[in-house]
Length: 157
Image: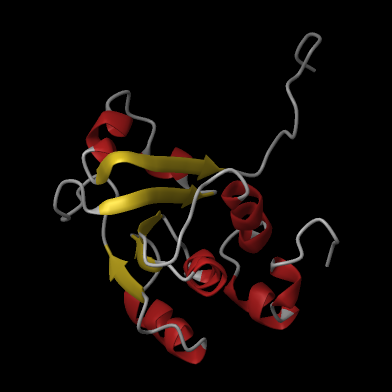
């Protein structure tokens, strides 16, 4: 727990540890990222590369948005059980899909959020142009990953 992330502090640490899919805390990353994203109740959000859907549940609960929790490596059935256990089944929709082959209508989402997963699917030079079609005009794409907190000012160590 840290004072820097008051929203994340409301979640059970055991639930968080059980649902982490990597080394970074997905709730802290999501809370940090959403401080720079305009999310309003009822918005449609694609949580791309959601892992075990903790960030999706967090987005639903904290911002009252509807979330498509998309991941290739983690089971949509297991994520659905996690969503059901969290009481978020009406606004979080787990799906199993490849981020490079999405089956959504153009302009479907108000925002696309990627928490610590973008390097796994977004390295193609054309990927951002591809995924942009799924965001409404004026929508947002927000990406967070664990790493540096500030620019390296001198030579790279």
